Image 1 (cartoon, rainbow, N blue to C red):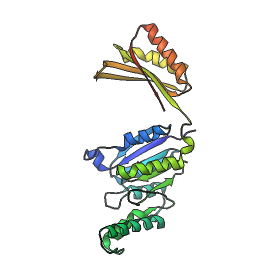
Image 2 (cartoon, rainbow, N blue to C red):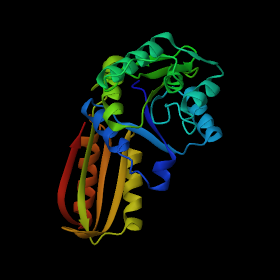
Image 3 (cartoon, rainbow, N blue to C red):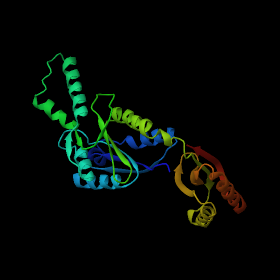
Image 4 (cartoon, rainbow, N blue to C red):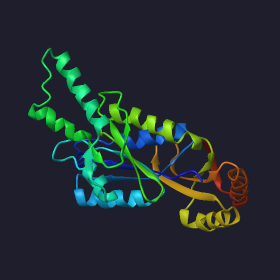
Length: 273
């Protein structure tokens, strides 16, 4: 079976409103381009106990989890420590990760026309970004060489950790998907077929929705009401979604029932991935 994909977004700045999250729509886009979908997403602040519990749940599952943010070396970055605690393994210097950090520091010193001082306090602090949970695998960072990392969990899934900066995170997530999960691309094509209904009530539609789902296992029936749409005004988008091979029959049954009931139907919408 295609694994479920999850997303964890880490950072007080998201919850406080200082920064607007951009990762959720981008991850949905990246997965959709590959014939995959996002099963769940969670945003959590820089709260070490809460993040540890969340990561422990992720590691215990069979899900593929993408985690953005909190892998730096300042006091408000807790993701590396929480990942180790959730797995019950120590943090330890990762030789390759620290070598990349040294390369980056040398590059910066060269660009600034200054000598590289590896033992300077701030340079030693930067090496903490290369102290990772035991067994971690690196995710290359094409922006500044400072790697992210991946850890496998006992539940059979994995969590992939990247920085919070989109300019770094998004190429790194593409690398993870293309390098580790290409075998799942397009394996379970999904489809969605819906129609705009005018003057309908969700409570009156519920029995029909239940009948369609019961008659077509593997298909979900959804109802999405809107009260102030700029084109359609107050309406309900009613449709079916699921396995692309199962949706057409469910849609024909739904459409026939709506037509028979005299529903006022507007445009149809078809989506596929």
